[in-house]
Length: 152
Image (cartoon, rainbow, N blue to C red; front, side, top):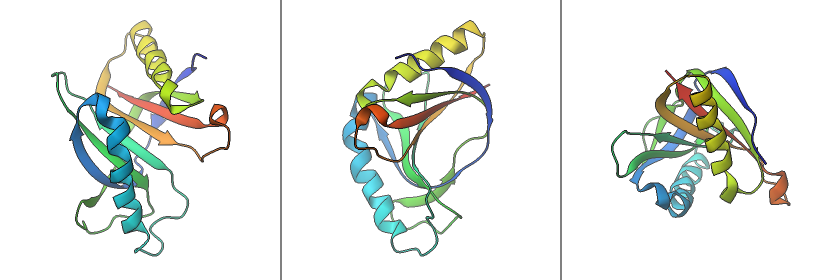
């Protein structure tokens, strides 16, 4: 299923994150322990989380090799860094956005749709993308993940 891409103005979202520099193929094994640390921290901070989603931010480089990833959770406010967990926010500006519906192992379809949209519309990526994970569903086919790629 091809994702529909739209141009949107996106705003900052406050996050609690653990940052890791990893090979692109290692995201699948790195995110769980990192987000676990974030959730352990959030549980000690009353009112920091009131329903925000898991959000993973990727800072892309034109160089081959590892990418900087921020595995986190949307929160209500900033806070003092605690161990590996620190406060940050998503970038803001114009972005190409696609909603992926289905299992995570097919999320690359949304990225391909966004890259195709960027090429057709003669836009340029700004080096940051992120995934906003929807609420879990019993059937992976119903799971929604919003994929955002910031534009120059």
